[in-house]
Length: 382
Ligand SMILES: Cc1ncc(COP(=O)(O)O)c(C=O)c1O
Image (cartoon, rainbow, N blue to C red; front, top):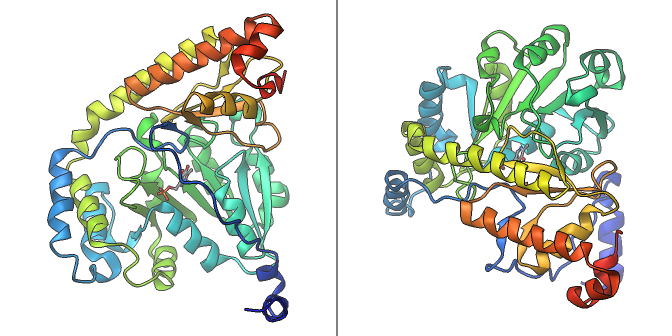
């Protein structure tokens, strides 16, 4: 396509479409030899019995998957004690987030998210031409109920709240969420992606509050991130609207089979969850000894404030040089942090060894540190 033609295509688009930036091409593929602690996956394979159901599903791959995810929704309804029409199944919960934005927002509308929060929401709001309001957490990461009821968020079409929250790992009492639901007349999207690592959950509230939509995923606690299984639970009027605009065959046959099998074997994950909580505590204590401060986490990751006078992007790069991938967020208030997913014991040992090594090199006299780092960039952020 010639440039003139491209320009005329782009300028014919709506203002919302024009502000979408093209993603640059040529990103390198991730290095498979790295210890990957940057996207909060579960580090273990699927339990054997669930893996077998995935393999068996491959035998049926020449058929389309079941329309409207009927058996999967039924299995989820039975497992969680709700009715079929209170459940929608998604290709991961991020598909469901996308549907919520498409169904309930028009250009010019506003949406509110507790911030810092799951940054993918920012992109979804932008793609709808909606105003994205970021509402800061209250003191000690509490839910600022009054502010949500009386500030700009009161006019938002919906309010997003992740509990436990990503990237902080903090958890607000379900009673506080219930207070917000009772007093607000807005849709509250409660994203419970990490809830199986937390002490409580809000699913029981869907029968009492028609303005609640709960999202779950099997990507984190059920080790199925690559298979893409997520659920939404809420009032049939809300759920039905989302199902109405969902892609036909949004999931594949393996996702269906794994989803149904996970729902039948949730107890098989007890050891997995125990391991993650145990490592979460062990790594928290080890990081404290290295001079990090760590927000107590109720998820499968830690948000750690790096030692004084350093910044998070510097630590992320230093760890990456040692083949450890962690997440860094450039957002205001997060620049001095890194987020570390909880992996296997071996992965966390490798992370801690690298963190100790980097920490040790920072204590060297500057000339030796310069030589040890092999690069002037080692001093950045000091
Ligand atoms: C808070 C939160 N919600 C939703 C998701 C999306 O999960 P998935 O699309 O894999 O179900 C994530 C993934 O990182 C997340 O952190």
